[in-house]
Image (cartoon, rainbow, N blue to C red; front, side, top):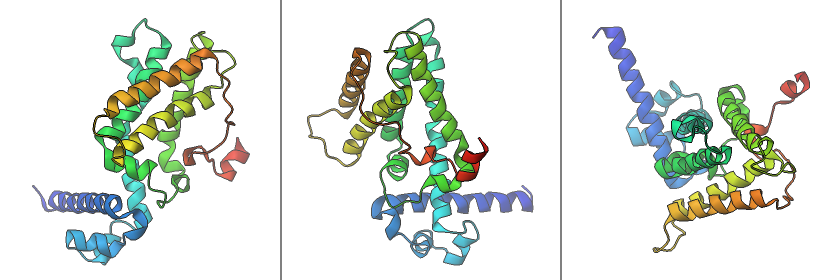
Length: 230
């Protein structure tokens, strides 16, 4: 291995150790209570060394959030599994949303940072960096709309609001699981499955949804310049 390759490997190792230490500290103590100095002490580096990798604590969070979304992947791609070939569109939608719950279960630290900690910076500040996440969300709405167009869900249903209802229900169970707020005899996976099935059944029944079509998620907040250009 040459000197340049060794330097790149060492730099990548330090970069990884910074993110791992920050993720653990953010989850244990809360984002707002963690400083660059505290992260540096965890990995036995100087704060100046941390700044040579990340200009600010916010940049560390954005890197972690980007990793989290990459780990989540594109849930809509789950629907392309051959097992759903020729099946109902609604079964594909169910699989897509179950992927969100699996992410919260398999990567709890990333999930907590991205969806629970209220003190983290809003990812809308890094509009271009998270374009892939917005595209995933757009595809999610399209999958729900396909169920509406195909007659599996009522024509009166707003695909965006239905998507939010399905997602919020599963995220609620994920937060209860993460916060250890379920009783010992409760199985969070079964509870999540029940919530998902109940929500889908409610949507199929034609129940009137009252929530407005808003922009509650930071990913939906398009910068003014982009909105004016569209």
